[in-house]
Image (cartoon, rainbow, N blue to C red; front, side, top):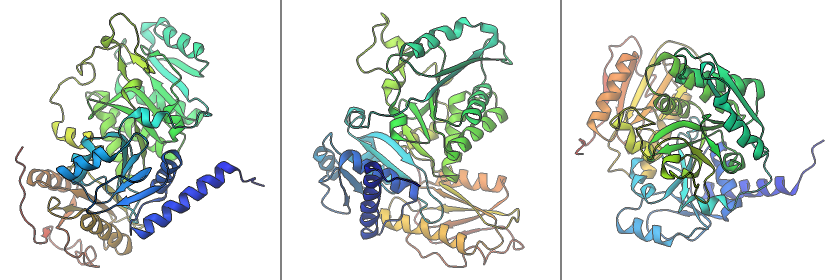
Amino acid sequence: MTISTSHDNAATAARDAIDRLLAAGELRLGARQRDRLAALTRIFGPAVLVDRGGFAAKGGVVIVVEPPTGPAAERFYRSLSSGMAVAIPFGENPAFDFLKSKLTDFGTVAPCGPEAPHALWWGGLGWPSLAGRLPGATPPPLIVSCYPRETGEAAAQHLERAAARLDLPAMIAPVDAVLGDRLLAYEKADFILGVWQAQRRPLLFVDTDATLIEPPLLPSRLDCDLALHKWNRWEMSARTLYVGATETAGAFLRNWRHLAAAFPAIWDGYALDQAWSLTSSQQPLDTVWLPRAYHAPGGEWPGRTMPHGAVIVHDLPDTNADLGPASDLAPILRGARRASRVAGRETLIALRAPAETAAGVTVIVRGIASVAARHLAASIEAVAQTFANDPGEFDRLEIALCPWDDDAAATAAAAAAGGHRLIEITPPHAVASDLFSARAQTRPAAVIALPRTGARRTS
């Protein structure tokens, strides 16, 4: 017998209110995304919709449906207060990047299948406005870390003492490293996955050189699948990594380990980035982007006097040299990751058909810049739903948003390398109900393109 509590009742009421608001605005979000919005309303207050025209924040959670630009974005930004959060239900659309750049990105919830093939983005004016409102009674995560066995136990003593001082559970173990005194990304990912499978509880991995200043409770209180810090707002760091107890979190860890093992020469942050993108395209991964307090570089304070508010301090200089081996690595990812979304050359959502036919199809969505956000969203929904209803002879679908010609060319090349058929569409043209079934696998491979206006990257 389950006894209902006031917490459960409040959560149900918040979810019902969000469902009614989304239905009134004709917005399609998945269950995990609606849960996130409902949780935000319990923190900040009731949600309101802001559509085209009149960009003024009037509620606790402001759901922005169409992107404001120029003066409208500035007016909207100035209308916000620390007691408000901003949510964008079409977070995959690059037209929202300008608004996002003015805010602090708190998190994203990846697409939720053919019924809700959009990424929910949420943010605000700064982490203090959120952190101070979170519930306090939350069990701490298990602190986990590993070090090369060759370096000796002394490598773990500092972190062990810090965890004990803060009364945090910890599991720190040696790893037989291939390179002796240095861990590969695969070895780190394999260790974290092994602990996660054995414990099935929220974990917070930190490098053994880290200093714990305060209990790292923020990701646990936000009840997410994954939490990590983006260095310079685009480069993912594996020095602080929270993973929840969910199956989606486990899928992320397995993807990270697989990619890190397949490409051992790349640094762990890039493998982490690609694992996040891959998992986000297939499952509703709920990600929190940790504030700088969870990834403070010790080089900023040579005297070791830690700033007020720091939670985890790492022994690294105040540069990005220790995170990525080259400052120009993967420049195509930077703009997208800064806005917490996948890039145009990556898959927004990947869907599977019930029957396996060894035939895949990639749909490139073009003409994004000149289309209203609702129209673009409707086209994405139509493609995903059409595939769910009638996939034809295809057993997998990938949808990619490509605002530029070079993005489309790179996506087309990747599709060809993977043996996918290629279809281009341009919103707001209607998507035929036989979009996939009309293209039998026995026909010659070709690009089926609807009329579009050309767009070429200028910067």
